[in-house]
Length: 317
Image (cartoon, rainbow, N blue to C red; front, side, top):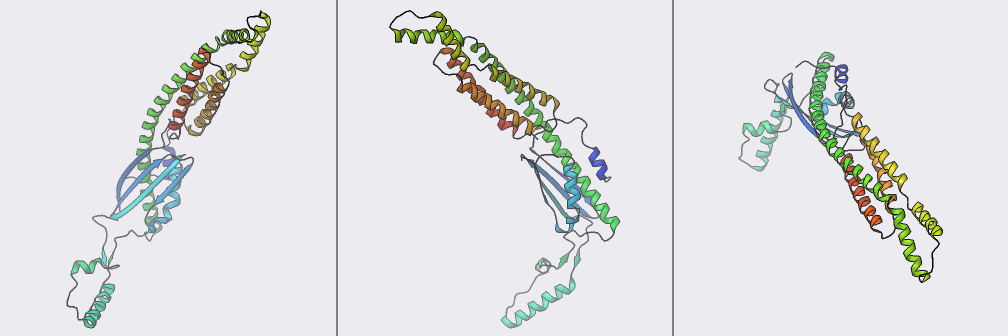
């Protein structure tokens, strides 16, 4: 394995960014100086970039450079990194003979004091704390060896992040398809509402005329005044501006998906605005006319679709 420098890792960032999910997992294995190294990387959704790195205490001097390697590739999400190092086939193993002799002397003293007859077998002796050395990784002595180990760790981590990132991009493509499908549905529903709005003014006029006839006991109604009142009622219930803003938000949402990159927070903000427009449409559509009831029903469907979009967007980087 040829170690990769920090500069090479930064250059691995794809030129064309894609919409990414924040959910992914990968694990890689490698060897160095007789040690078997395993690095696993797992990511889930989070408002910001939150990196949790778990590794042997002796490797803590490499923590900052490994964190930076992740920051160069990942911008948002909770990232769990586990670095596990175990003895390989060529790993040195040492027996601490002085400590072993001390254990044996202590065991003999206890046998004499208690009269116990049991003997310690070889396996039990080797399991005593500190008898076997070399099972935990140690920091190399020379600067050259330390740098070589650092490059190996960084290279393995880069491979793990690349594999995890591919999973995140694949999931991101599925999410994008689902988002586009829901956006198209909301767009169709918005145009349905726009068509119904055009029929509301005559509906308001019919409603006013019916109510006034009931109040006036069949007396003649001034058609001009009736039209004026119907126009005022229609104006108070007009949701044309809300529909225009909703359509604009849908266009901006689609444009962001086409551009890709780091989208999650921007998309979530747009969905908050879309949710506000849907609520306003519901509050400004009073009455029991069939047209108004139809608008209310469609607006509720739009609101439901927006809620589903918000759930999905929470997992986009």
